[in-house]
Amino acid sequence: MASSLPDTSKTTKLERYNSYLRRVNHTKLLAASSKLLFRVTLLVALLLIFFFTLNYPPLSDSPHHVLHHTNFLSSSFYSGGAAWEKQVRHSSTPRRPNGFSVLVTGAAGFVGTHCSLALKKRGDGVLGLDNFNSYYDPTLKRARQSLLSKHQIFIVEGDLNDGNLISKLFDVVPFTHILHLAAQAGVRYAMKNPQSYVNSNIAGFINLLEIAKSANPQPSIVWASSSSVYGLNTQNPFSESHRTDQPASLYAATKKAGEEIAHTYNHIYGLSITGLRFFTVYGPWGRPDMAYFFFTKDILQGKPINIYQTHDEKEVARDFTYIDDVVKGCLGALDTAEKSTGSGGKKKSPAQLRIYNLGNTSPVSVGKLVSILEGLLNVKAKKHVIKMPRNGDVPYTHANVSLAYHDFGYKPTTDLATGLRKFVKWYVGYFGIQSKVKKEIDSLDD
Ligand SMILES: O=C(O)[C@H]1O[C@H](OP(=O)(O)OP(=O)(O)OC[C@H]2O[C@@H](n3ccc(=O)[nH]c3=O)[C@H](O)[C@@H]2O)[C@H](O)[C@@H](O)[C@H]1O
Image 1 (tube, rainbow, N blue to C red):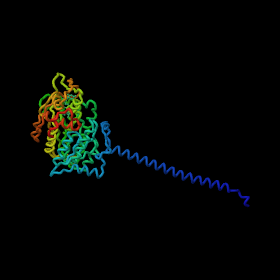
Image 2 (image 1 turned 90 degrees about the vertical axis):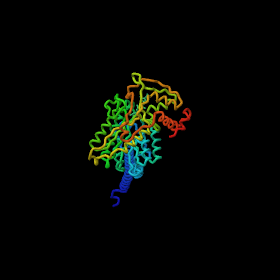
Image 3 (image 1 turned 45 degrees about the vertical axis):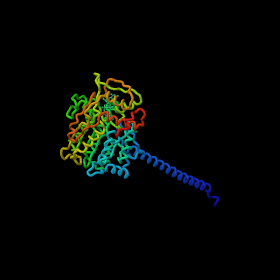
């Protein structure tokens, strides 16, 4: 019988072997697919982390971001976490009765740093915002940031156009005031990078106002306009009532646009807004792109400097204004700023809208500026007198400040020689230059 039956022993072995192979393949397949799944999940997770790190705060699509160096390791970078919120609150909490809580934009900038220190010193809460862009060497901005941090002033690193970030700041802090100093500065650079002026001075300003108008309470706003809005105005000295419809540079045009935008937000939403027309502000911790600063550098390095003159060979002059005087003007404007009248994005009644000149009231020629620097540095400058290039400059500025004096006692007290001595003292200390500079600078009081 057994022999009549087909020999199944081989088949059975074969089947067993096949079944074994199927099991092995199946297990292998399972192992391979779980490996694949693991790898894909890891890849997706990494991609997600990468994506969120890059986009938070979200990047605007503006080309200006090319200039920004976001420091992901910086403690000031927006984390949105509890520790970050604590820093934001701590920095912006006033330490005097009825003190202000001020958001200072451009806090790592020249005027921003000085104003932040002055506000903090008198007991106001200050939170800085700055994008640390590379229009000029950000090392100086980082040094200013360190100075502020020693005085418990925290700077949030972010851009004016980052609506999420600024809204978040208003969620955390009920700011009473905004001191808006962040801007793309520089008159002549506007021909090289016009878009950056539109991005910061117009789009960024509007973004800030959009958030301020919806905030509850609405803050009062003081912001930096510019003497350059007087453009081709020929009446002297410049008064707030003079023509400002002939800007000579795109920079001036964007600042003038800012004044008109301020009018709109005041009119529709009841925001209290004060514009300050700064006149060529200079001093310690100043901007390296400004003439007094790079003249100092070039004179010390023995490099030639260009002194502009008008096309009819007249001297070019500026109403150079010392930083401490401007700071007093900014604080005076904040102190006299009335409350905004709107809430929930709606105007309740008319709100304050003001414009003031903050100048020095005594123009000095660029030639004279250079001769003061030569005296202080004890070095003869290699001067080239050339015709002013047609790139946005105006020949002359001169402020009438009687309105600011009347409304908040603004009275500039520093002449150019005194202010430049203080600047040079800071400059040689900051850059560690001692040798050629007169000893008497060291004996200057701060
Ligand atoms: O009040 C303002 O609203 C503006 O002030 C400042 O602009 P300006 O008054 O043009 O300052 P700045 O460049 O230092 O030139 C000073 C003088 O040196 C002359 N100048 C300049 C360069 C040069 O190589 N040679 C020269 O003679 C030049 O012709 C000028 O007469 C701010 O930069 C600007 O951001 C804005 O705030």
